[in-house]
Image (cartoon, one colour):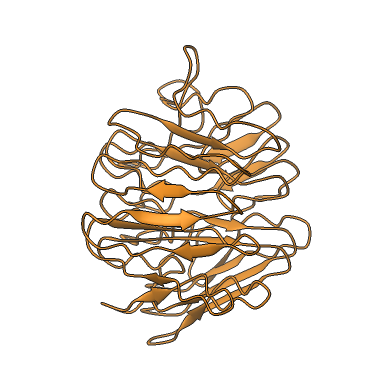
Length: 323
């Protein structure tokens, strides 16, 4: 889903009113200043394109510092390799009317990302901390693309996603080796993630939902705990954890090697996510919809969860996937 295996880019456009913290849709000011030797906004890991598309009226300023691959400013000497199809915004494209501002990367810098109405996504990049956008020297961004890993934090309306990266603290999505975590804050959710050493990050407290994600080594992250439901997400190597907290959703993801992760995200909906290598997980949470998820290699998965819209997975000709 968010785990962009080599050559694969998964763009997760949340359902209406859903804001992708990394998605700056039109009318968005995406200013991300690269610090020396800092990995680009999405940390262009080998074969990874930092998808930051300047859709009309979008100001995506990314200073390409030496050794930094920033595919944003389509100017001379700049390669913007990711031409998203119209109205399609990639990982760094804030949904409409989203304000995405990243302060200059200095010590103790405050990186405010995507202040959508009533949404405060404050990411304090303290020294030696995993900076979400402002990649401090040799620091992996909170989206922190660990080899072949991509993490997306979607702050849904009225969600307060406060991520205080205190020194030596694991980032919100807290990419422990081979662990992938996607946190989607559902309405009225208070997503406060205080990453202090050995501190349990509480994420997505949907009504009656206790989303406890223990991002400590070898710790089992328990996500969607709907009443009487134990959603154990064992992030075992090569496992991708996708967490969609929709009302009355039973999200049971037993991610053991070669295990089929079954996520029933909406009444009568069977979403099978086979996160086996070369597999791309796509979750279309619409009634009676069967989500086909096994994206064969080189397949771009585009998730357009708009009402009554059938998500298009195989991009039709002239359609640029998030790659």
